[in-house]
Image (cartoon, rainbow, N blue to C red; front, side, top):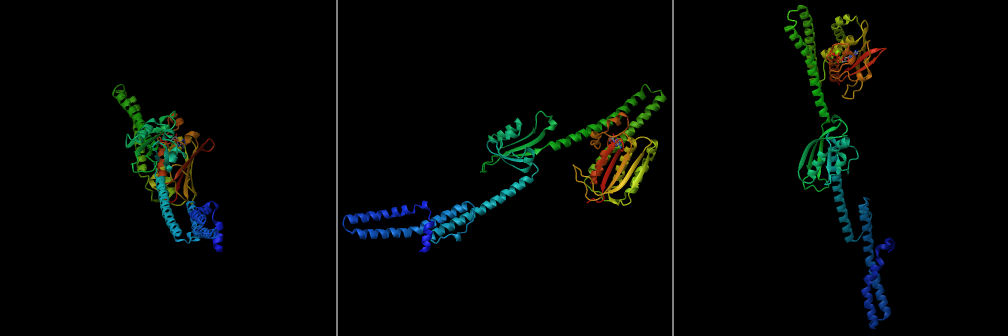
Length: 479
Ligand SMILES: Nc1ncnc2c1ncn2[C@@H]1O[C@H](COP(=O)(O)OP(=O)(O)OP(=O)(O)O)[C@@H](O)[C@H]1O
Ligand SMILES: [Mg+2]
């Protein structure tokens, strides 16, 4: 009884408990009034009987109202994700208990479903985010509903809920999207450019898009999916290749046209002039020699590139290779009264490398030091152990200790803006071209690719006081 009283106070005011009791007791009150009016029942007995009916109603209705309120609170708690235990409720009536159990089961079922769906969505998003190509989902107005990581990277972080028209300034693309959204086509493929139109075409991004309408069974807001492929990188590679072919052809055509010109001269005006013939044949031999060096360098570059992903496995000692490279160039150095000063740190260990490629690399650098160094000076070669290969922005360098070989020559310093371009194929410093110093412009490109294969790197410094120093770093181990 005490418990019931305490519960009574727990019933909320807005439960209409009192009005329900009154409404429930109203018919019996009318009956008692009539009986008293017809003098069939004394008024005091009627009041007592009526009071006991009201009391009965209170006792009978109270638990139900109380438990319904508990149930209401429980459902509200569930809907607000507050995990209240069913056992903590004060529910004893079997009907309310059944309802509470049923609600509990339903909640558990939908919670599990929601969790599975959430996990599925997270894993789907993770999968989409790992795709290298941008993907967008759009609604029937062309608003972006979702985008994967690559799309955000390409188009910006806040693209969701924006319209495709705001993001892509290409009429062809927008027309293709409209065609798919208006159901004029199931799918559209196109290549288009984005970016500032005032910029040159090679500064804009070249994109390939596949726009596909989703099947009608898709119940979400998404109506179509756009997958994009960024062709800018592929285009750059294509351009590099075509530039390379154009440069190589140009470099070959020049000596060839000189040789053809002299052949014609020898056949006509110089036919009977032995002095001129001797002079022209000498030039022709030089040009033919240049052509064969150029072809040899081109073949060498392509062989190194072909082999670039095969790490070298030989164990080699640096000392004899440096001596070999220097010996091969002694005569050339003598012609310019130049000498080599070699200083090797004895602690330099054996390294894992390709012997013939390292010799070629050192020979190219020493050849440059002679060619571009001042007459009557010394070329200094230093070999040390370094604790790491300097970082490269374009490829992964090797880890651990490295052998650092620096080759220094005195001479006209290389300008800062030119330093970064020295390893480009066919790039030559204008001042050297003007001075008529012969070269194919491939020696350092070959050196760079040999270093990439060895996961090594190169640093160049050049100034008036210390001259020009090329330092190459080759990892001791190919890990
Ligand atoms: N030690 C150096 N001092 C000054 N400039 C240099 C030095 N080494 C290279 N260069 C510059 O870098 C350019 C590119 O060098 P690279 O070795 O690739 O080509 P090259 O020497 O012209 O031709 P080759 O293919 O015959 O070696 C050279 O033309 C020269 O202008
Ligand atoms: Mg060279």
